[in-house]
Picture 1 (cartoon, helix red, strand yellow):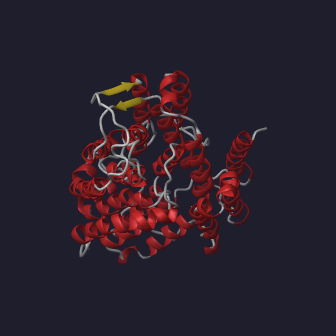
Picture 2: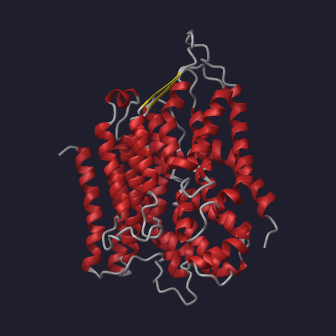
Picture 3: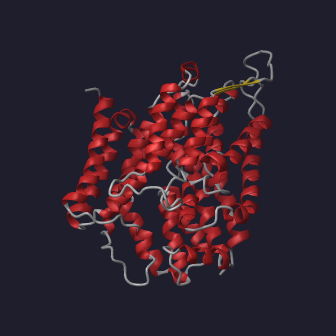
Length: 477
């Protein structure tokens, strides 16, 4: 058995262990930490010991240092390391906390996460876009702004996978790491803040009862200046990039070639399937106790269908292979598992101290944690804490509606923070790692985890996010 096949086999075995554990140790209903902690009584969950956050921090540290200090070892063994650290948490929850519900709930979230990313990744891989124009700072800004807009229609993952390869090819004679970093900032994250389709945290809010168009009504006036500010920084930096700009002397036709209309249909099916959920459409069947729904079945079907029917010449021209989604799948199975204790401890503390938290504090707490934890459950936990502050229950849609009407600044704070701060690190949002992996396979030397933070996100994004807090949330109660 090849190393690749054996790694996939290990991953499948881990899935089976997650699921079978519910049958061996009790068939609990899926546990939603945010829902449990939003109730008026004491939490019915037994909280994990604080030291159980160590596997998460170890994995995070290895993701940051592996490619820098022990690259060969990391590239060869990261699937095993990720799964091993995740299994430590699985065993702890099964045998010590007797809490299999949290594991199954996390497994369901992970499968949904991978179903969406993989289906959009494969479907977009069969779409070939060639822009035969000379790369200029203004053209690049237009591409980034276009990506920010369509991120709200096909999601940040869909927009990222659709545009990253054309963006790299446009700049092939002057490509630098900052091109990819700003692409991650704008297209893979900040762009998708206007609709529930744009980013998973907002979709979870929609499932809980937040109105579909609430986000665009209450976020656009923060979204627009933020997008323009980040694009402005990019334009200034890109205008100074003259190295190799004239390396290739050629005449440009200024034409745009597009192939793969069939795959556009696949993308639309995937986007529509996002709403095929019992919480949105009552007649959609619930496949409980399986940790998968009709939505995920449709998405995985699109992975197979789109790959088999895509134009092979387009796939070859895009240098398509499964390595980027494989890397995301293995790393995030460990991230999803190891962050369970951290999320539950954070949710508990947010609930206990919710009465003292202001919109500004919720903004920074949600944002900073969304940069290093999955921003979707982080958003949900802080939404529950915010509503608990006003004696409202996240489990009742009518109360969610009341909350969004009476306390919009609180909901705006966590909605903006969860989406925007996902751009702070490679693991802040799923598309970030995929864009990084695709770029590295195209020969671009991307900065390390710490390099990303220190050289780009902290000096560029953090001041912008600070001014967002100062203008929109500071002093709010």
